[in-house]
Length: 122
Image (cartoon, rainbow, N blue to C red):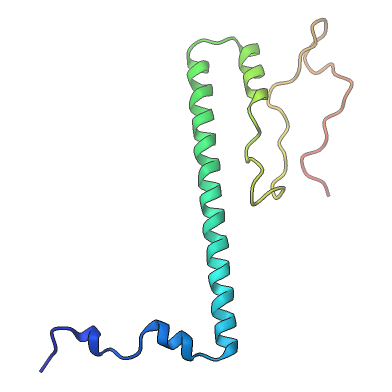
């Protein structure tokens, strides 16, 4: 006859299996646990970065569609931290060049003497 509680007769629990495991198996399980915790930490940190980027994008687009002048928008964009922000995966992606060239008060666009650094290095 089938029992109403089949899990009650299932055998040893997970805790019993871990406690009865050898030292190598316990070490591997400990490494897997540490990797899992680190992975979830990175996932949470990246979620926060993407949430902040979405918030900054909404703010910028609100001003853009509100009729702000391009010079004001450029200044606003320069104040915002570049994406991706520094975090657990810091320095893995190349930095992009500014989208709008600087305009000196008496000169033309791009008349700066400083050369931009290349995005990709060979």
